[in-house]
Image (cartoon, rainbow, N blue to C red; front, side):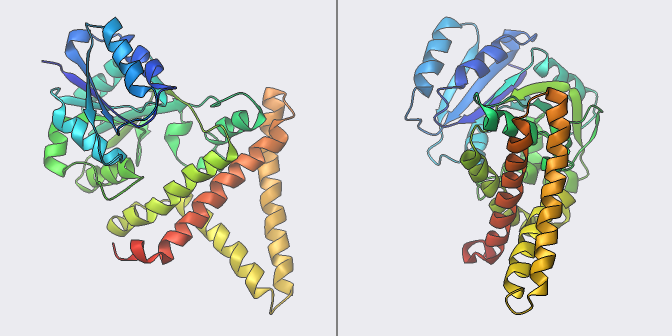
Length: 332
């Protein structure tokens, strides 16, 4: 009987699923005490083939693939948890590579009672070669881009509002319920909000490390953050007290741009306020880019980082505002 069940929701992850499986196989944790459950949303690429090949070459590692017909992450997580035999659940994603002591460290933290859900920090390399991909990787772990999302950059163990992926006891799911399948995103944050609402702790330890591959293009980044912003509103309707400053500033910024632009049609002086706001924002972005340009000694970051951070802010903010007025979300 395994003590840890690693659960992985995936869909069309043929490019990255093998590197995740290799990283799990290389954990300093006994393989007989470990199982991997992959909830696959009927992938149409080479995902299943890569999993089968890995299973054949690692017969001593228990790997089970189950179908996730809804193709939604929370649905896949719930199916994988239901199939899990381990008392401890460790959620991972096909886009990540946990370091070799990841499983042993999360289990140690859980055994020590440091939190009901335990996680670590991301190291975020570029998802591809080139200026934009490298700039996105930096923006995705910069405080100006992600605010107080400590799991992206902190070096101090602490309580947090959320952690990436997370490790928790299976019994916790029986107590709180599974992941909310009405959410297409932010399901992990909502799950952690329920834990905190019931008096539990979310524990973030920077010694628990994984690599997470950032998006490689601005368009992919925009879609990712628009999804985050849109579904954040649905989650907040159930847990309004979980709203953080980092989550409200982008929609306020976008709203101010729209308001000043439209109001300036009647009161032209407001367009000067708009210009001042935009210029101030660009100076702030440029300041962050200059520091990173000097740190890495690469001039490309002077242009790429402002573009990446602005894409994150504007996509999140616009989608958040749209979800506020979207009838399908207002009914929730």
